[in-house]
Length: 102
Image: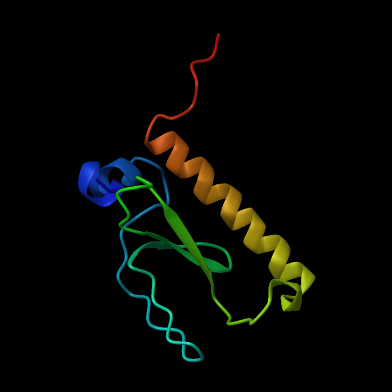
């Protein structure tokens, strides 16, 4: 069961700034497309991937195409990692995966 079918958009929409969006197109260089785009982040798109082995699996796709991670300019790479951290926190919070405080 994927996040998309088990929790639906409302689980992620509880977090401000996250909405389902289908306005992403294929990469003009390699043709990559996110399976279920959710929202645009600072320098990337985040989307869900339907894989029953990994419920809630997220993919982040950098706006610009690069063949290698070491080719991404430092400022853009830093912003991408910020996007990764933000998407992780949103997913964890939306699915109540944070351990109880106390």
